Amino acid sequence: MTPGLDIALLLGAAVLLVAVGAVRLSTRLGVPSLLVYLALGVAIGESGLGIRFDDVELTRTLGFCALIVIIAEGGLTARWSTLRPVLGLAAALSTVGVVVSIVLVGVALHLLLGLDWRLALLYGAVLSSTDAAAVFATLRRLRLPPRLVATLEAESGMNDAPVVLLVVLLSHQGWSHPWWYEAGLVAYELAVGAAVGVGAGVAGTWALRRAALPSAGLYPIAAVGITVLAYAAGAVLHASGFLAVYVAGVLLGNARLPHRQAILGFADGLAWLAQIGLFVLLGLLASPGRLDAAVLPAVVAGLALVLLARPLSVVVSALPFRVNLREQVFLSWAGLRGAVPIVLATIPLSERVPGAERLFDAVFVLVVIFTLVQTGTLGPLSRRLRITAPAEATEIHVETAPLERMRADLLQLEVPPGSRLAGVHVDELRLPLGASVTLVLRDGVGFVPGPDTRLKTGDSLLIVATGGVRDATERRLRAVSRRGRLARWFGEYGDEADR
Image 1: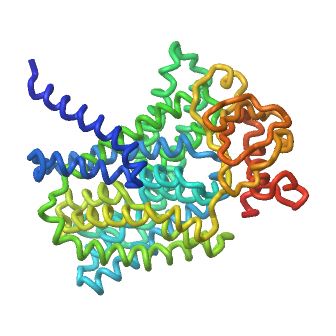
Image 2: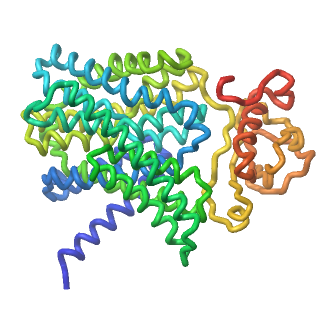
Image 3: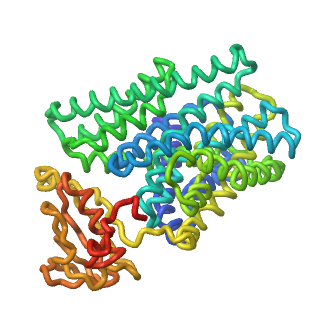
C-alpha cells in the first residue's frame, strides 16, 4: 500500500477534473481559464488547504517542460500559408521589439521606482515575452483576420527563445564577456536553434511518412516526441531549444502526415494538460500574504509596458512592413502575458538575485490584473477598430479514413449577422474544384444542400476541401463574405492584402 501516492493521485485527479470543467464555465462567464487555474493553485496552497510548496527549481524545470508542449502544439497547428506572409513582422517583434520593450520598461522602473539597472532590466526582460498559451486560447475564439492572429501566434512562439537567453544572462552575478560577445552568443543560439528545428522537422516528416507503424495511436506520440527531441538537441548544442520546438512543430504540422488529425488532437490535449498543470503549479508557488506589497510595482511595470514599451516596440518593428495604424493598435494591445513571464521570473529567483522575490510577486499580480483587463477588451477593440473578419473557415480536427485517403480537410463556416454570405446560393459560392459544401446546419437541423440552397444568417456549413485547394477555398469564402456573389466583379479576391 502507498497511502501517500493514493492521496496525491486523488488530489491531482480532482484538481484536473475541476480544471477541465472550469474551461466551459470560464468561457460562459468570459473569464480567462488561466486565472481559474491560478486560483486553483492558490486555493490548495498554504493559504487554502495548507499545502506548502516552495521548490523554485522544480517549478522552473516543470514550467520549461510545459512550455515545450505548449509551443509544440502552437507550431503543429500553425498554417504555413498564413504564417509565411507575417514571418518577417513576427521575427522583428520577437527580436527588435523585445530589445525595445526591455530597455523602455527598465528605464521606466529605474526612474520611477528607483530599482537598480540590473533588476529594472530583469523586470523588462521577464515581461517582454508574450505568452503562447494565452495567445492561442484567446485569439482563436475571436473573429480576427488570419494575418493578425498568425502574427501574434508566431511572435508568442518565437519570442520565448531570445527572452529566455536574456533573462539567464541578466540573472548571472556578473558579465564575464563584453556586450558584443553576448549579442553574438544570442544570435548563434537563435540561428542554430532554427537550424535544429528545420532538421528535426524535415527528418521527422520523412520518418513518419515511411515508418508504417502498427498502430495509429503511435503517430501522435512520435510526432510530439520529435518536437521534444528538437528542444533537447538544441539545448545540447547550447542553442535555443524553444525556437527549435516551434520550427519543428510548424514543419510537421504542415506536412501531409499519416493520421494528421489524430496528431493535432493529441497535441491539443497535451497542451491543455500542460497549461492546467503549469498554472496550478505557479498558483501553488505564490504566497498570497506577500502579494499586497507587490501591487504598486506590478501596476507601474504594467502601465509602462502597455502604454509605452509595447506600442513603441510594435511601431519600430512594423516600420519595414505594411501594417496600418489600426492593426498596430491592436497588436500593441493584444500582446498577452500569461504563464511564461511567471515561469521566467523563477530564473532570477532560483539564481538568488537580490529583489527576485518581489519580482516574482509583481509579475504574478500583473499577469492576473492585465489578463482580466486585456482579454475582456480584445473583442470590443477589434470591432471598434473594424478589423473583425466577417466569416472565416476553421478546421475541424476529425480523424476519418476517407479524408485521409483524399488528403482533404473538413472546414466549418458560420454565417454571422452582417455577412454577405447570407442570401447567396450554394452554387454562387463558386468554390474551386476539389471543394464542396457537404452539410448545412440550420435551426438545429442538418441537411445536404443543393446548388439552389440559399444560405441564411446563423447557418453553419461543413465544407470538404482537398489540401491543394484549401487556401483558394478560404480566399473565395472571405471574398463572398465581404462583397457577396459579385465579389470578383468588384475586384475582391479575399486576399489578406485587401483587408
